[in-house]
Length: 297
Image 1: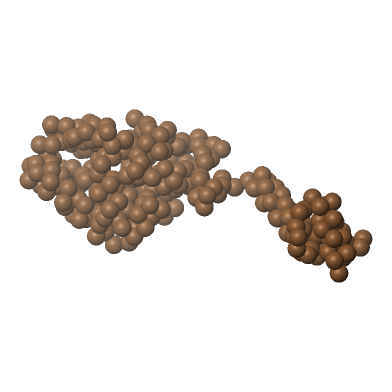
Image 2: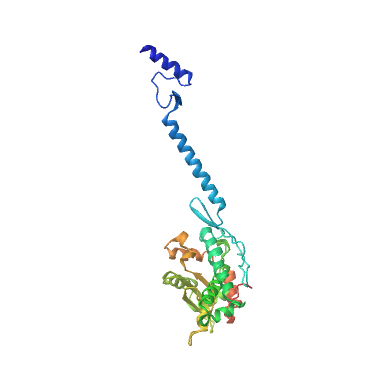
């Protein structure tokens, strides 16, 4: 017995392990009696399985043609290959997609701008040969539903994105617009309370608008889907003329990634990135003159 223990200790020392205990699967030779031990086989199989899965995952990612890539469980949408393939081109944002953080997150901006806004543009290009976007709004209710939905979607989103900016540059309404707000609502605070209430309570998907009527008074209205006040005023007898110059998208695609069902929080954050200089320009140049805002000019 003593001779056997001495042999084991000598064997341990020769294999690089120094132990006075008998052999275990941790310190025993990898090959015993010409045969691989089960522990080493199991570890090797695990290693090669993981290696193969990793190679397959890398190959699948490299060959994918999707514009969506996943990193740290976050989808990132990149720009489409073409944004000027037709009558209407996708306008360039006057700010970076991440510049509205933390109020509107970059991921939402990418989806909203590249997928939804560009999607309406692409569909509109395939649905009509009319190049006058204002005309499309004014005739939408009596025309093709595809033109109405996508023409409204393209017009509305163009107005929406062009009236946003970095929070530090938000500013205040011009003197002319501030006076109109006070005349119509009593004060900016009263205007904002009414606007945010309309935005938060709008049932389902749609838009909230600040418009100017034929008498120069400002009105807050809402529309379903991708409709806007320019469409309704030209279609129904007795509907007052309204010229929208500020619009808020309350479709879930405009806020759900960050705010989920907390639409009121999104509305509050959106106010912080309104470009009041641009909104004032739209009011003074177009809406107060009874003209449809042409945001592409």
